[in-house]
Length: 417
Image 1 (cartoon, helix red, strand yellow):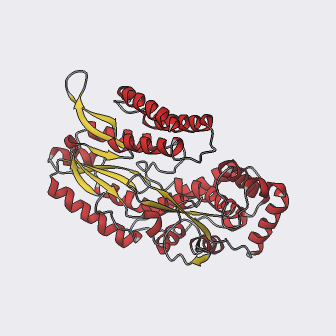
Image 2: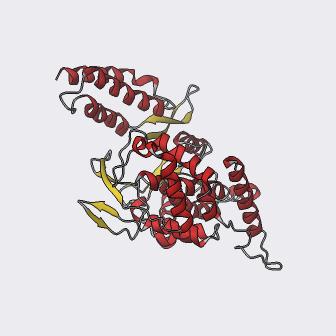
Image 3: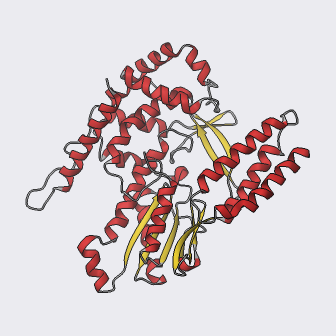
């Protein structure tokens, strides 16, 4: 088996299903469920497919926290062939059952704690086999203005899309954020969205097993009746599959091509958007704040009805582009360009500057006393490199040299203390 060739065929089948669904007319109706993908459950227990998934999981999970069984990558690989064969037979005979997730809490930028659910290594491998199968199927369906957790797309692409909308005269922005998306997303919405493309009850049952696996907290297994755990291999893709409905809802609200030219001539509103996971921005032109607020309410109702999700009240707001707005750690605003005209600029957000100071305190100052100075310096360097690579697209990136001078002094002080 050639894994890439199988994924290409899945993509082609999914494309054929989409074309069949969209060709439906009142005169010659077609069944939208025709040409759905079948037999995915047979694919995930194929030895080559399973080994390819295991290799990817081993690379990503090396040195990371194990699940409730405590098995690390090195321990699993000691009897790797035997463990994979056991896992394959469980999948084939349908006796496989995922173990509960291990609850881990990490600090968020706002001071609150983010709850992660860490699967066991064998469960990560099974989730990866499913992700490898589902990704080419749903890439056909995903909107071009969705950027989160997709191949060859990044936060930078989403930010550039926002900059492009600002440069084309879009004036009002709805800064959107879904409240606790991964914790609250409806299991019914997930399974319903996957079922629109996949006709395989065994595969759907396996997704449900993961969603209902529960979470281990203080030695007790708590049931999971909603949500897709952050930390799960397949969770970002499942969230994208559901939130893709929001993308196409917004697409239908917008006008494109000749219709866009027509409403421009008549001075009617239009919109564009960019989404990265559960963070998104909707841009409006030839509209006022009242129109933006009413659209925000429509989006709120749609998310609640179709996805079982709510908008974050404190993070979802309507802003004018001249006042600037925050997105994915960047601050976008209109400022004077080289020729004196107002142009959209990407800047480093104030929260990002505060967060790196807090992170450097964590890796240099608040560490065990036995940790060497060299280790702390290496950890601090890694934090700075990651931060710099992320924010290198900002217009004021070169101007944060003074900030880095302060940071370097802070590191030295922390190491002395």
